[in-house]
Structure formats: C-alpha cells, structure tokens
Length: 370
Image: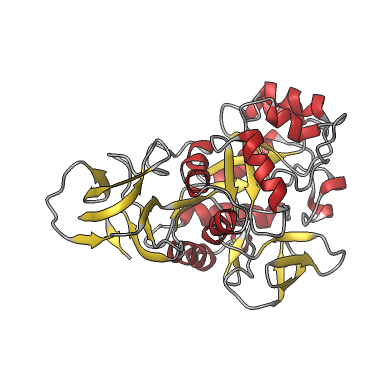
C-alpha cells in the first residue's frame, strides 16, 4: 500500500510531503501492493497511543470482561487511537484480579491493540484520593503487585503510587526493573518526590491533578519532575488544566517529555447523564465528569484524539508537538516504541490521515484501511 502525497509526520517531529510505503503490517521503504490511499492536502500521523484512560461507551477496564475490553478497543480504534494501555482503579482485590485476568485473555482480534495495563491504585494517598475509593486504598505491597502482574500475564506496564506513604520507597527499590513506576495521588514534597525519582520512578501521573500545587517555595512533585528526566502525563480536555498552564508546561518540560492522556471514563462517546467510575457514581455534563457525592473531578469524558485537537486548536500548542506527545512519547514511556508511536520502517503500519481541520479522513491499522 502507498499513502500518497500526504504531509507525513517524521520521527524528527516535523511534517514532510512524501509517500508512505506499507508492506503487509509494517512501514517499509517499498511495497509490492499498489493499492493507494490519497492524502493530498492532509496530515499523516502515527496511530495515537493512550496509556491512561479508564473507559468509554459505557464500559470500563475494571468491568473485568472481554466484552468491555473489546468495546474499549473498538471505540478507541475508530477515533485513531490504535494502541491502548487502559488504567484500573482502586477497587477490591478480587475485582482487580478479574480485570487483570480479562486483559490477559483478550485476543486483540480487532480494534486497538491492548499493549499494557496502567495500574492506578491502590497504593495512593487517601488525602489526594480524588475519585479513588478510600476503603480499598492499600500501602505499597510487592506481593500484591506480583499477584496482579502474574494474573495479567505481564501486561502491567505502569504502577502508580504515592511515594510518601508507608513502604513506598522500598516498593520502588524492588520493582523498578520490572515495571515503570509513576507518582500519583500524592502529598509528596519536592525532596520526597526527588528521592523517589532517584530510586527509580520515571513517570508522573496526570501532572497537576491529585498533587500539591507548584509553589515558588514548595515546588513539590511538579518541581521534582521538572528537575528530572521523567515523562509527565497531561490531560488537555479543557477541564483538568487551564490553557495557560498547558502552554507553560510545554515551555517547562518540552514536547520530549510530555505524554498526552485522556483519562477518559465510561461516559466518553455517550450523552450526558449518570455513570460510574471505580464503583462510585459520576455525573457527566459536557466534558465535565464529577463524583455525584463530593464533586471531585472523576476522569474525563474526552478521547485522546479530541484532547490532541483541543491542545492544538484551543490551547495554541503546535501540531507537531501535540502529535509527538500523543504518539511517540507515550509509546516510549511504557517501552513499546519498537513497534508503535512513529512512522518508521519496521514499525506497525498504524497511521491516521487528518484533514487540515484535524478531522479523521482515513485510519490504517497494521496495513489495513479501517
């Protein structure tokens, strides 16, 4: 297959007008298949990679069923997100175990590829629990994590924790070579976060949200992340973070370290109404999802493609930067950039053709037009 005449997003982070060759499932420098996809006047970008979202179309990763995982995969693929690492929540151990088992058994027959699991909780701080259910929060426990990882068949790519909580530092020491560790739902100060990073943390969950603010005398997790090489997640749904703060974050961290995420919950792709996240009722109005009791923000109701568009069209982030942060950076952050995240020879032929208004024209997944 040949995607012809498009503005192709390069590994260097620029757009170049050229043809893109696909042989079978992979990007190539030539092809024996003369089928053409015309992309004149359009952008050709890698398939998006969402490493932190909970659900969509009234399904959730924590449902623990093949039906729900397939529904997530189908919806995401239809919106140009071709690799997914959905997030679990702080829920009872038996339910979390079932979610892990369901992921292991998922066949990836169609829809977005399930490339991992983001284990958000239960090792968080009750003071910054957000939409995490307090009664199921636990102290960091290596054996607990190993039980979940075994049930998931090794799919857990990210484990989130609050480094100031009991046993967290020792937990980082023991698992840092097995899984990427992310700081999340935390009251940690600068020194504590810095120590955690030195011990092996390489990721920060939804920067700014569920952590102390960035103060000029108390820089906290945000300052510690700035002074490190960690990847930092950013939710650009227009609700979680003010556009000015998003622009400042791109200046501070650059597009080499920011990972755009959706943090979407089951109302994504649905109408306003009553939904659920982590066993708690959620009210959704427009893009805003909040716990029905207490009013805390409960994830987003926006998919990653829409978050990327919002970053560009409403927050004045350069398209090249937004694309990198929704493709290559998330793939790198969980170690799947050998096959996903960029349009390089030898990687999966996952591409999305967008018109100049960033509407989807075509989706190509592993060499097949969807």
